[in-house]
Image (cartoon, rainbow, N blue to C red; front, side, top):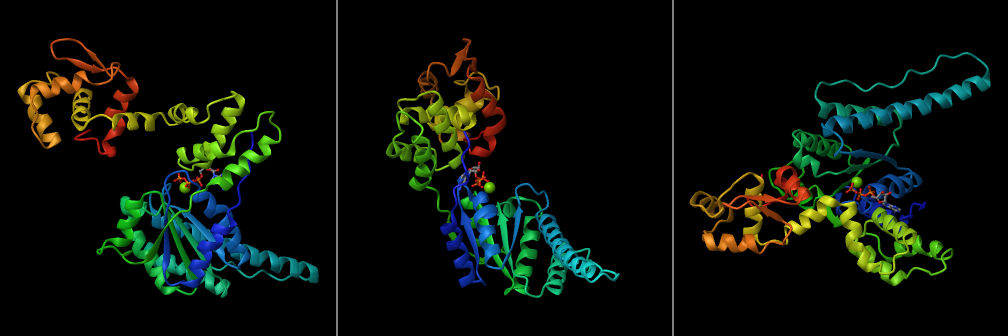
Length: 366
Ligand SMILES: Nc1ncnc2c1ncn2[C@@H]1O[C@H](COP(=O)(O)OP(=O)(O)OP(=O)(O)O)[C@@H](O)[C@H]1O
Ligand SMILES: [Mg+2]
């Protein structure tokens, strides 16, 4: 089943209007995973920027090891594109006039070993080629500037570029970590401190549900309930691709109870998320015990283990409390071998605790 892109011109307009009205203030937008940030930047916002005579420049900091290198590379590409266009128009003019003239050489930016300075050289060269050039600079996954090794260096260069070319650059940064973005613009010691205003990304709602379901309902004998599917969309955290997949599956398998189908759908689509969610419903003591079992601790009611539990939990517990916490885990969580030896029965949970849980804030995990 193919679904088209749902256009979000109004939202693109909103962001662009804000940037144009206050060009000296950058804008940072937070939106959770998979809600359509990148799609908005690359489609609606880029198209609108073009219409308004701006040159959209998109850079994804998630996929780049060195953010500054990625940005600099994009500007260099842009310079080559613009130069290419210029040369093409010259070729046409020349061939029409039918006389051989050598082409103007492609403009070159001055070179500097300092990538921050290089960024400025690219921009300067761009302005020489096209003095009217105005960029909409879209930096996706900007929280990576906090996380990545060379992030702060990149941020300094971006700020420098933005300060130098205030009238020629509109700066938009998006990210899927609210904390990351808040750190980026809220921490005093950072180059990015105070650079941007903050907004939350407007997630899709009922309008998207209607966009997907209306055409489908014209073909179905029993139309899908848009009201119920709006609730489903909310339970799917307003993720458009998930919603489309859910609806496709529901139609193909003739699902009756749409709301009831959400949980199993999510569990099969995001097995890790399902494990994590289940894990965090356990009590803190149970979480600590499971983490310890996963890393091979036996004799959980012994003195050494109790000390470790206390240090991970921040409060001491009795052997009886440990036994009770273990006994009240759901039946298929553990295999018990007697003599105080336990194993985690669920391979997914075990794998997650051993490999993936470290970054998730599992009490003392890792
Ligand atoms: N307006 C839209 N119409 C139809 N599908 C959309 C729309 N916006 C996003 N999608 C779909 O939703 C999925 C996620 O979109 P996108 O990658 O833009 O989200 P994101 O917020 O950037 O996610 P992440 O945080 O993971 O980078 C993609 O499969 C995309 O095609
Ligand atoms: Mg994205």
